[in-house]
Length: 79
Image (spheres, rainbow, N blue to C red):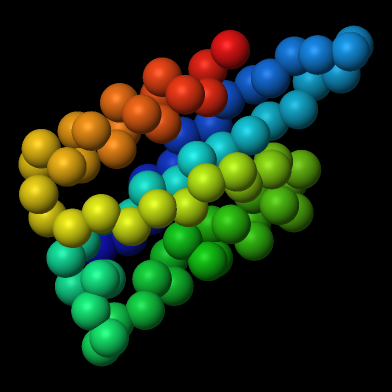
């Protein structure tokens, strides 16, 4: 299990800003015994690189739910 990142450029007022939505996939990440350290690590690296993390989401091992989350992420942040 780990984090999957999708970065998008947003243009406005003459500036370019990168924004990212991170989706961690794995049912084990939803229980109390496993922490999602990959997404935390990736968030820190993206922030260091000047990329704003606007969403972090964890999804279990359900293909339909994962498809829904990815469609929302891709459709919602591309402008």
